[in-house]
Length: 121
Image (tube, rainbow, N blue to C red; front, side, top):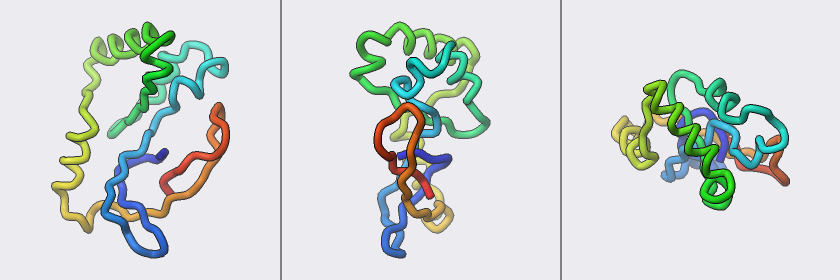
């Protein structure tokens, strides 16, 4: 799921109770061969607030592990706060349920990815 912030998906006019924490940054496999300085690009893409970066075990966990390792070192060097998704979900769900945005899910083409991707509407 791609988007900007946590939300509850709406289907057929009804909000579902499954909190979505959408990825806000491009994935490594979408950037390889399209961007130079991938880590610099990702760091420049960070914005104030919540940033969620999806990591694929078959990409970053194998041949591109050194790239991930350098990215994480730079995140920690810059003292950028990190959190586990389960903690973000817990904090979001502590709010009044009515304050969590209820949004449709759409389909979108993402550069560097085949087919379509589910996105926050």
